[in-house]
Image (cartoon, rainbow over all chains, first blue to last red; front, side, top):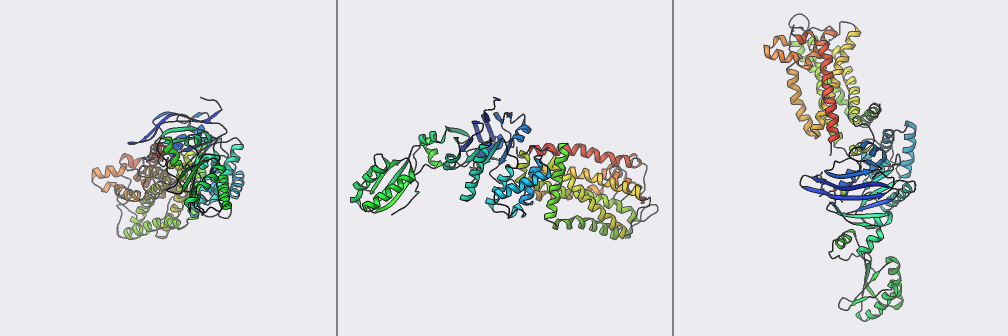
Amino acid sequence: MTDDTTAVLADGIRKRYGRTTALDGFDLAVPAGTVYGVLGPNGAGKTTAVRILTTLLRFDAGRARVAGYDVASDPDRVRAAISLTGQYAAVDEVLSGRQNLVLFGRLRRLSARRARRRAEELLDRFGLTEAADRSAGTYSGGMRRRLDLAASLVVPPRVLFLDEPTTGLDPRSRNGLWTAVRELVADGTTVLLTTQYLQEADHLADRVCVIDTGRVVAEGTPEHLKARIGADRLELVVADATDLPAAATVVERATGAAATVDAELRRVDAPVADRIAVLTAVLRALDDAGIAVEDVLVRRPTLDEAFLRLTGAHADAQRVGVAS
Amino acid sequence: MRALTDGWLMAGRNMRHVVRAPEEIILYFTLPIMFVLVFGYVFGSGMTVPGQGSYREFLLPGVFVMTMLYGLGATASAIAVDAGRGVVDRFRSLPMARSALLSGRAGADLVRACLEMTTLVVCGLLVGWQWREGIGPALAAVALILLLRVAMTWVGILFGLLVPNPDTVAVVVFPLAFPLTALSNVFVAPELMPDWLGAIAAWNPLSATVAAARDLFGNPGLGGDSWPARHALELAIAWPLALIAVAAPAAVRSYRRLGR
Ligand SMILES: Nc1ncnc2c1ncn2[C@@H]1O[C@H](COP(=O)(O)OP(=O)(O)OP(=O)(O)O)[C@@H](O)[C@H]1O
Ligand SMILES: [Mg+2]
């Protein structure tokens, strides 16, 4: 396939490290100009896949094309079209942040002056201006990741690979990164990102796949995936068992779905579509009705849950909110 | 072309490293100063050379070359440290020349070698060594020694990539380098060695450079009439070029295989 509509294509990729099989027939097709999320738990093979697609790692079988070029036979063309921000920051720790960005700009054929100007812009954009002249080795983990990302954007690539880009970032930096990704995509870049957070994929990605032990176990739009995983459930424990019928009515009105009541645990539970709106409505209605609540929680599919469900196992609840 | 510009950029990177961590510069000077003082002054005072001339004058070109050989250790551990750095992943995913990281090292080490060579010459002059054939041949001798250093750099780079643990590098390099100097004309003229040893010493790549440098500096040293002794100048050019021709491509190959 050499068409321009598929930016990243992997076809039956296998990779073994000694006796460990990291990728076992990995398939992927990322439409150009979209954000694609690769979800998977630790050891699923995300980093291995990214390193193969970015020419850093040789593979044993299968075929991979990036930006229209074959990864195995045309790695130089692939490298010219891509940027990678790996799971571990790949910046020069002795050089300052500014020197790093200038060096990578120069290696990407920017003139000395353009490289310096571009470094300035990126330092500013990623909030590193103050630390610009310090050795990158003295940066905090989050700063280093930001510098690493900036280094990938010195020349906007056709395809950007981000391996767990927001792990270790505070919420502000994470939002900054999401904004940066959206801007890039608006300018035509294709982004492939790996993550352990369903929420992140949901937020950013047009399509996602879930991989486990080197194989894709689910693929589609986030909505499609969530539908397969099933909806969130609201669970509510009242302080007084006599309030149970009233509480069930409140919950049914807010969620528009049938609630199940467990008298022994004093618990009401129902599926929810819009978690926050429902949670707010329920708490307000209960308050108005004077019903004392001991505990409220929304079961939210985590990646592990998604995972267990995709492989048919049962999921446990995760506590996300508590009120009384 | 790209290999040159990228190599140049990477050499600049290595030199910025030195500027940011200037403690290391002290190392540039200690080894040459120590070698000249210890070998040139302490040993050089007690011994005499066959023929005429002082042992110190005989010895110093050898000490120059020996210092260049030991530079191999610094090169090897620098490249081993570099190859273990995360930033190598970025270099490898950039559309830059594959050789650039290595040739950048070679370039920066040549600059370092020039500083070392200057230190050596100044210290040499202080302990009474001198060149006697004019500045032109003396500079030619220095150029030959630096050429050998470039070859040693590439051998060191190859070495650093094959033994990619910076701590083991030093442990391995020194025991290898010392016999190489002992089995050469650095300390003793090969004619004074037992025949078989003398033959090994005469063909030693270090000996060619040392003999050619002695000749160009006008320092004493029996030529001997073995074939390598009579063709010292040619060999002093051929040996380093041959080493570079073998080590540089091999180093680039093993760099490409890194992490694969
Ligand atoms: N260099 C290596 N040598 C041996 N095994 C490896 C190597 N790199 C990865 N593996 C194995 O390959 C499998 C996939 O690893 P990979 O790093 O791709 O997972 P991942 O999905 O990125 O995990 P994480 O979320 O922890 O980053 C794991 O079982 C891992 O142990
Ligand atoms: Mg990983």
